[in-house]
Length: 298
Image 1 (tube, rainbow, N blue to C red):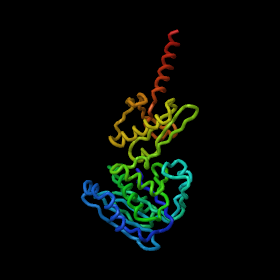
Image 2: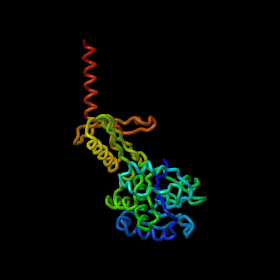
Image 3: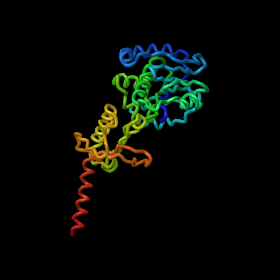
Image 4: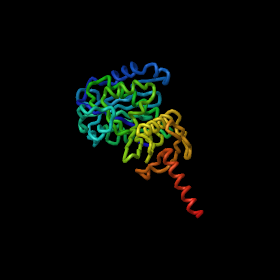
């Protein structure tokens, strides 16, 4: 599985952003949590700190390393498209330059810093264990990003690769601190909904990158806000308890019983997702089967 990472688009390289300053802010933001969760939180590796050099340093949380690396090559991201569907981006905010300086924050079980940054050397060759705890990795990345945003005014936008959304720095930091100590799931997962001719569909983008199943609901006659609530509640259930929903399970909700089906996505046959069949769809299918049986008996 690929590394998890977040990109921070900058207006300039900030020489005041150092590993020591970041570690100080991490301890200020998360000190009590860190003391209860880890034996050691230290700066393990650093290089490139200077007025013209993009920073590269690693914060080690016991055996999990979080890498902060300056990126000096275009990433080819469509930030305008990402901004349109991002709840933490205002229409008045100035879009970042995706080809300008930026920082990548990623997780690795070992620090790999040989070779040019982002040239198949840092993220491409990051050593990732087979037994990765993706939720822990995402949570640590999010905490580092949250603290980093308090260390510099050079960041214009935060791009979450799992959800394909961007957030204004102040909105990201506020949202992450509000749900502490948990992962700000709404930042890492996009909850999409569409209402076409009275039929509501919803899906998630980003759950699979966290080691869970993305969720889809199609052609529901329930109101959109009810469908979104079911999808969000199901995502939170899987975040809290893991992949506990099996094929054929029935999920009782305030909007009725949804049937779980684990099958290829409606939009991508190679992507296995958790389909939630809404109550009305289940009833309609039952009615059709009953009608077919009645026709055979004639």
